[in-house]
Length: 388
Image (cartoon, rainbow, N blue to C red; front, side):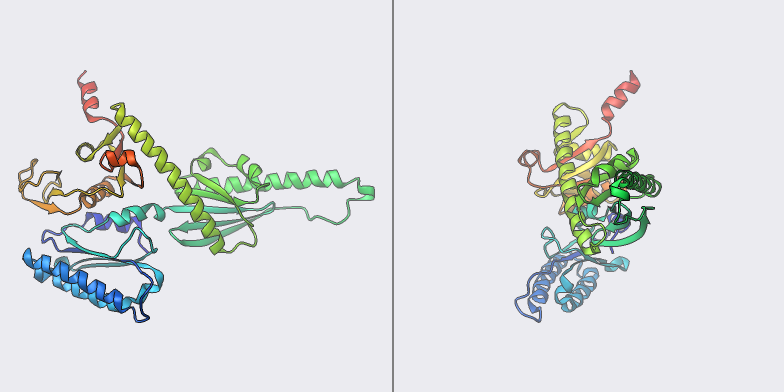
């Protein structure tokens, strides 16, 4: 399974020979049972990349990677409905192969450059977050951990609930007393769940926390959640805590997480737009974002689906330039062309610990160039304040 650490490793990779090959495969409904159409499509992609490599004089180092990808394509046969990603560089004896969740935004493609094409993985990175899913009943709780589409049960928490009996005593005189005792024991059970969540996840060992329960139980559970737990609470959903299978739980959790992320993205985009208009901690447009990344100002990088730009990157100091210049404006060393500047920006963001957010369908963001950043600070103001 691909992880954040793997994506960082890929972001750090750079080939001076320009033979870093990226292959993404998206399974489609086959036209025939032999899946021959898939292999033919990959062959066409390989031929195009080989022609480009021949024109650039890189046919030798690239060919070995492409032939290996062709062999892989012959064996895919739909890949059991999963997407596939391959990152290869023959000159550095590098090969990484991963199965990914099938996604509409991940078309089959093959690219060659000095860096790997990581934009599709940037959209996937949020789904790699670790999520705790806690299912709560009046006398039991089930704790799951989920990463991507993988979910695993961790532990059960059983409450000390008094056993209910059919009789409420002589003429029902014990009914009220029994009900109060049941409520008190349920409250103690919810409190223990809150304490366990704090003990296990209060130190930021997970990114999101979800609660699954019946509607009538949720208010009582919510009251006993510590503020540290609430900070990572992504939402709750209605489910049968006892009878639900891991597949049921995963489907409910993924829906809540997707809505939670959309709300976060919308709020963050609004914040960046407002901050940029006020000339505060917001940056819009490629030129301003490049400057904020190089000066260490950026906290979160926002990339729209429509962002596309070419540029150059210095192989010595890593300076990224919008202008197609042969020598770096910072250190004077040789530069190499970048087909998709998003890859260079994503790589730098990963190395700097800058969070990345994918923005979809925002006309206002499109007018700003489909790229922006939320800033930690403004460098020129920090320098001015220091001088003052």
